[in-house]
Image (cartoon, rainbow, N blue to C red; front, side, top):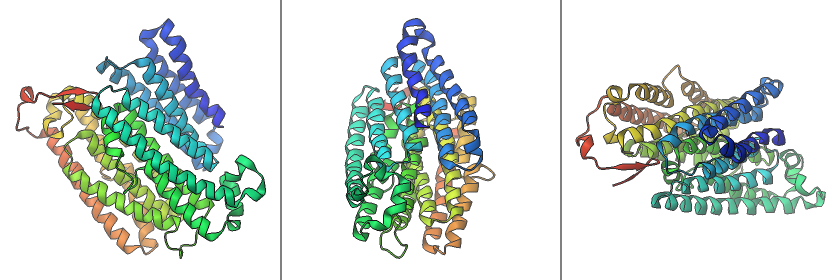
Length: 440
């Protein structure tokens, strides 16, 4: 399955080599068409698995869908950023897409770890492609923080492998199915240490608080089509990897700092921090980045509840968030170019100046805010009900309050941008935008 799914990124690389020589003008369009065909073919080929509730196939289909959206947006975005080297951009973009496919479909913990680590290098290279100092700083911070987290995770993985080396199964020792079949053979203290290290380590790439420090900087300066993949897909599939491990090597809920406890703890911290940060953001893409921290926290809470109902809610939350947030990042890049600024206070009177973008932006923001009957309202209510059923009253209260504050923050930013007035005339702003980063 991974090999078949990997044909998509390989096709992009082939187009980069051949298409740039034959029809360089049409290269971005050819790539977008190819990725769309791959998405449709994936849905048709795995139709039986998808319709029979195999949720990892839903993840693969979702990865290809967001990648298709990113490819189409890249056409528009590259036209707005003529200094970007298209060939390098699309090579790294294809590698990033391949890494996301492997993470989403991996049935082996160490394979998922390798793909997550490789995604850091590929997406970091895409950030560096922006070619300015802030991008270099953000990419460096991203790579260093993420690599430290992944170092923690690999130490936990080594502990697990050492405990099961008697099986002489090599690579297959760390298959999720094998881990679950033999987890009782692992010493309890090793399971506890491995759980802490792996949840915290991979939690760094999922953007969970307090391991989130790289996320606002990286997402705010990355190319907008790449930011859509980072927030829409990478955070979600990294969190799913944590859930696979927690389910394969379970600890009793009575054990202090079990996998479920850690997910609940980091989840509610992420929701609270992300929501509070939303209230004070002035940068359009940093606002979306902190919203992603809030959303991944909600998903972590759902996984932490641990019931089948809550896990189903997380899958819906992941799907809705991926579509909504990737769309918002794509639109934010074009708004930044239109207003020659990334600062929200300068993006005024959107409805009058850029009506098409404004209506699309408003629709996605309202969906992100969780206004019924849009998708996130449905999945968030499911997670709230899961907390109620599990008698997790404190987390229920904190999540409910955070959702209210998050709704208020998003509506404040939306209404101010749609019809608000800036205190400084646009022609005196003096801000140049290069790929979503301002240089005053």
